[in-house]
Structure formats: structure tokens, C-alpha cells
Image 1 (tube, helix red, strand yellow):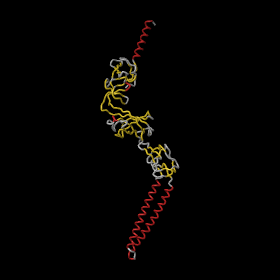
Image 2: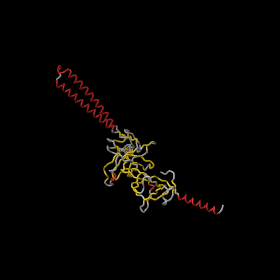
Image 3: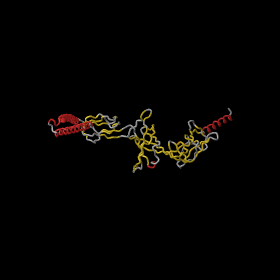
Length: 359
């Protein structure tokens, strides 16, 4: 091969390399018009709809305690029993008194019926008959009182057993077998784990904009790869004067196709509240925006009108940011194509090659 041919081949390879290097591989996205929303990021806590500190209604010695912290219980389950021997003996005594009163009432009625049937024809005075009638009424009243005493004592016996008022998990236990407890003593803490809620504190400047229709996306610090959508159940219109915030309570479906998410009360949560600002505008991916220390904000726009794609730097003004996109107030129009990957080292007028997967 001649030197002339070798030189020409080398120049061709050099030119090809320069052109290939100039065509920087980039990923692009088409600017689109969409509804603009204001996104509020808040932090909060998973809370339970029911939390109760349980105590007995009577005093006594703890005789039976079969549950511990972490145990799940159903509504109505027996959690703790006090020694009810004396109360049970009092109930038996009250039942015996009822039987005695029933016999007295039956005897009084029999004597009254006989006296009224015979009457004054056989020398029974009217006052004696009325006296027997009063005796029947007195014995009947005593029987009613004895029956009420039985029901009262039955209630006292039942109150020696502490039952779960709702289903949940025992979060704390404050007593032990053999301890003497009094009414009102905190013995167990029960926390419901169904229908959990998310409580967030939101700044006062967002109070008017929020409504039950405001979309909410929730992520948990314990499960950062999962997110759930929710809706606002309650907006408590009372501000915290120290923080100038108010409570927003959100309900979300925490059960998915593969089962419950496994969240518990007390977990920290993050929420995104998307407030519709009532206007549309152009928006691009956050990756398309370049910010410089001098305050300039730019995006690289792809021009495909001259054959090979060429990029031009465009200064833009941005607005609200939400869902990974940025509102463009000035500098871009609907339908413009901008670079979202590979835009860090581009130069004005540089040709690019558009990679697959561009949007």
C-alpha cells in the first residue's frame, strides 16, 4: 500500500472517530402540558384508632394472668382474673336469701287467699284480711330487693375478670400474679392494630387548600420501597400555637394482594399531599434541568430539523416541583424535546445520538 493511500485511510479513521465522539449518546424526553400541582411533603406517625389503659372495677389479688406484652387478643377475651372466692360466697348467700324470700311470698299469698276466700262469714275480720294483703306486698318487695342484690353481686363477681374491650395487642403489662390491685390502677395497655391511621402535622399556610379529595401518597421509613395511596379523613381545625401547624389524619389501604404491609402504631411515615393549583402548564423531568452556582437554570433542547440531532442550551425559569417533574414558567414549549440523560458535558451545537428508551 502506498504512503498516499495509508495517509488517506488514517485521515478517514480520525475523521470517523471525531464524528463518533461528537455524537454524544443521550436520552431525551418530550415536554408536555399537564395539570400543575403543589406538592407538600410532611412527616408523621402511624396511630391506632383505639388505645386503652385497662384496670379492674373492684379491688383484689391477681389470681390468673395468662397474657403478656405482644400477645394479640380478641374482643371479649379474659385477660386477667382476681381472686373472687369471697365475692362468690356473697353471691351464694344472696341466692339463698332469694329462695327464702320466695318461700315467704308463697306462704303469705296462700294465707291471704284463704282468708279472702272465707271472708267475714267465718269470723275473720276485714282488718285482718287487709293486714295479710300488706304482708304479701311487703314480702314481694323484699323478694325484689333480694333479686336485685343477687344481680349486683353477680356483676361484682364478673368484674373480677378483666376482659378485652376490643381486639388488639397488649403493648404494656403493669402487674403480676399475687399483687393487690385497686380500681383505677393501670394493669394492661391494649392497642388496636386494625384500621390504622396516619397523622401528619401540616403548616397553616396549607389549611385552606386541603380537602377530603386531596390525593395523598404515603411511604414508611420501615418499608421505603413500598408506598400506598390514601385520602384525608379528618382535618382538625385547631393549630398548634407553638409550631403553627394543624393535624391532618389520613386513611390508607395497607392490605395489598400479597398481604398486609406489616405496619404497627408508632412507625414514622412520610406523606406527599398533591394540591391542584387550578392551572395547566408545561413540565419536564427534574433530570432535564441543570442549575449553576451563578443562579442560571438551563435545559438542553434537541433540534432534529437539520438531519443529525443537534443540542442547544436554553435558559429556563422554573415553578413548582412535583412527582419528579418541574414546571417550566418560561423557556420551553409543549412538544420541545429535551435531554434528560447525558446532559452534563454537552456543548452548544453538538450533535447527539438518541438512545432507545427515550420518552
